[in-house]
Image (cartoon, rainbow, N blue to C red; front, side):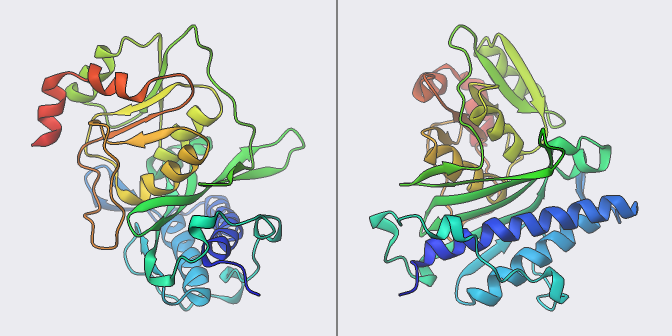
Amino acid sequence: MSSPLVMRIMSLSINTAKRAGSIIRDVMQKGNLGIVEKAKDDLQTEADRSAQQCIIASLSKQFPKVNIIGEEGSSDLNVSHDWLVTEMDLEFLSKTCPSDLIDVKDEDCIVWVDPLDGTSEYTQGFLEHVTVLIGIAVKNSPVGGVIHQPYYKHDTGEVGRTIWGLKGIGCGGFELKTAPDDTFIITTTRSHSNPIVQSALEALSPSEVIKVGGAGYKVLQLLEGKAHAYVFASPGCKKWDTCAPEAVLEAAGGTLTNMFGDHYEYHVDVEHPNREGVLATIGTISHSDIVKKIPQNVKDALKK
C-alpha cells in the first residue's frame, strides 16, 4: 500500500531541497551569479532560477495534480536528468502519518516554494543566511515544511543541513533548543528596516536584537535557541517565505502569525504578500502578550 500523499510530498521535498542546495553552491562556485533586479531591492540570480526549476520539475513529475507556487513564477519543467529528483527520503517515509493527514487529496495541497531565501545575502556573501524553503499547505494552513541550509558547516567538514517539520509528528534534522529565560532576544530584518519596523522593536524592549537575512534563517534562530521572537512589522514577506518556516516552527511548538496574532491563509488563490508583517515566537514567550505590546501606530500602518 502506498504511503499517504503528505508523507510522500514531504519525503520527496527533503531530497529535492538538498539537490537544490547543491545547485545553489554550484552557481556560486562558477562565479557568474546572473543577477537580475526584479524590482527595487528584489534580486534574482541564476541560482534562484535553477534551484526552482529543479524543485518544481521534480515535484510536478511525481505529483502532477498538486498546486505548486514558486517565487520565481512559472518554470520550464524540461530539466536535465541530473536535476530531476525521483528518490524519496525513506527514513522520513517510514514515520507514521498523523491521522488527520492520512486522507489528504492532491487538490487539497498547495506547495509553496522559495528556491533561495535570502538572495541579497547570497549575492553579498552572507551564505549562512541562505535557505531553500518548501512548504506544504493543506487547504488553508501550513502542515509541513522543509528548510535546507546549503552552506551549513558540520563539525565533520560536511556542508549542508536539512530540517523538516510536520504537524503531528514534530521536527527532525537539528537539535531543538530554547533561548535563556533571563533575556529577551528578537531577530529581525537585516536589510529592510524602516521607522515602523523600528518602532515595533523598541516597544518590546528587547535585551538584544539579531539582524539576519531570510525568513527561513530567522525562524532557525528561534529553533536553535538564539532568539525568543522574530518580529517584522512590514509587508515585505510573501507566502513562499513563511509557509515552510511556519509549519516547521509550529511542529516544534512555536507560533507564526501576522502582527495582529492571526494566521495567514495559504490557499491557491490567496494574495502572495504578507501585508500585515510577521511575528513568530517559541518557548515560554507569550505570543499574545507581544501582540498586545505592538503600538497602535504600527498596527495602523500595517492596516493601510
